Length: 382
View 1 (tube, helix red, strand yellow):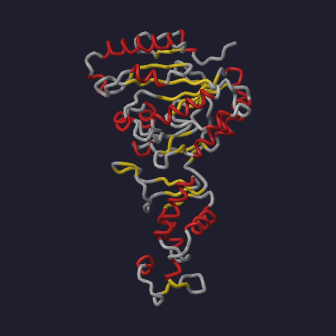
View 2 (cartoon, rainbow, N blue to C red):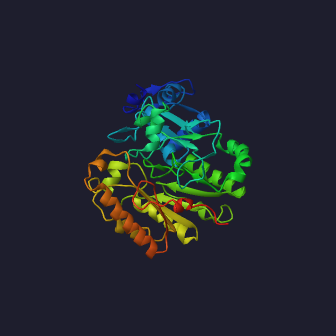
View 3 (cartoon, rainbow, N blue to C red):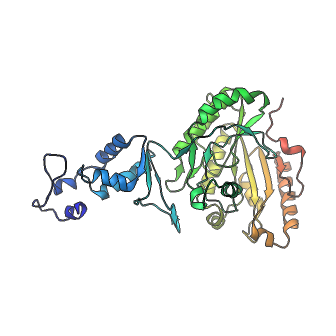
């Protein structure tokens, strides 16, 4: 009613809420969104609640319209001081609106706590690893091994659950306890194998700020303890990493890149960072004198996307290291008749390219020409 009345205010129709003095509906329309944003941040700082409750608590107690509350929340989301957890997150495409069941986080983010964080991984080229985020907003459909495992263990119900990320709020406290325990065993720590340390917020075209900030603090803490860090992302690297006073110059920063095709991206990793932005951010770190690498895995078969692997390799020819591997668990790939011959040919091209450009290479187990000796690709030289 309040929103409807506001459309037909001629100075005669007035609204009387819990606040006084009485205010005309004409005045309501002139209220600045900035004022509403400040009100919401002050009232709900570091809290989370559903949108319906926000409307219920403010529609009578304030002079604000529901449309103004919604607009203020969406602006706070763009500014990175509020996070909207949408249910469902997508209907054919990512939702941009705010509805009754959506949860709004003010100066906070969806979170979980864990009992441990730092552990030794069984991934062939890894050593120790940290997964300080649960979930993966990029919506990968290769399929995603991490998603399949989380679902099989009952940690999530479905795909929509998985693309709502949560940060581990006690990650830094856990590291303070675990670094002294494992430090003598650690060669390096990888971020991350079941999530993304610089996860891309496709709706707002930037990194999730809470995830990015936590990742930077983790890298800083590990480096302070003389522990090398490797990272892998389908997001965009922040320029802060080029600060050699803050971060170890021996860190190695990588991106996953298996195609340059936009249709492939829409089909298989729809909400990851754009390919060119991903590459440009990595090249920026390279130009600052930092070590960079690319993971060309899981590399798709021609019936999934027709492309020339040499074109992809040329685009990342500045990197120091390459990891190459075939796609697994994918029904379409298995339908390709010349599967083995195709991956043998690709491996040969990658090997030739890396040799020509003096790039170190590891080919993953199960892919033609895989090598056991190169599994120590990131181990620090003594």
